[in-house]
Image (cartoon, rainbow, N blue to C red):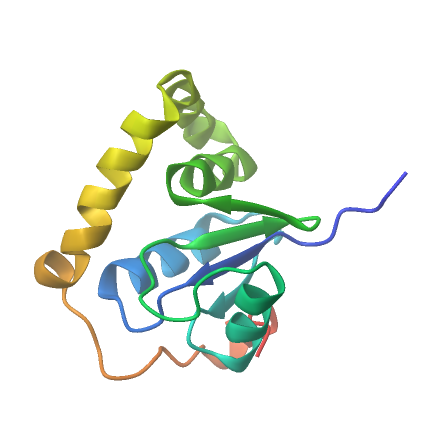
Length: 135
């Protein structure tokens, strides 16, 4: 029986929507299971290469659980399942065909900078949440 490591969320560190999502996860991760790294960081780049994923032009956040990769809508729904409570209700969207779920995800991803903006550099975690970040 293998021991599950902490799920790792790789996110676009200059995207305001992505940063907001990470802050949301940190606030709602009551069991302290998630770890984070920006896609642009050295750790993020190493993980992207390890799993043969693009190292530029980020169009998805990545969820890694025990050496298994989840992308796009599947990653988002899997994250909700870890949060438990009300967030588990999002699991109903697993019933939708993946191409449909991913089309909605891709629409938001393509427009995220226009709708939410972006920064010139990745967020710097505060001292109290630094242990959740892999870099």
